[in-house]
Length: 87
Image (tube, rainbow, N blue to C red; front, side, top):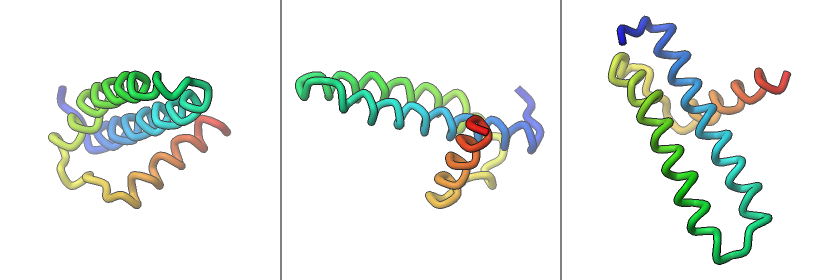
């Protein structure tokens, strides 16, 4: 896939948004699961997150390494994407 800079940024943002959504769902799910099921839930969501990251963030960053977000940028992107979806 030949990504333009804007397409790579959109792919990166989508991957960050998706992993943030998965993390949020895990936190909510853990509140309703017995303790003995927490490890399995974390493993399942972790595998899903790894797949999303590999197919989105990793692809975007291989094409445009300068897009590498630091922790602050990662959190900002996640908040902005969630806000756009909610609004």
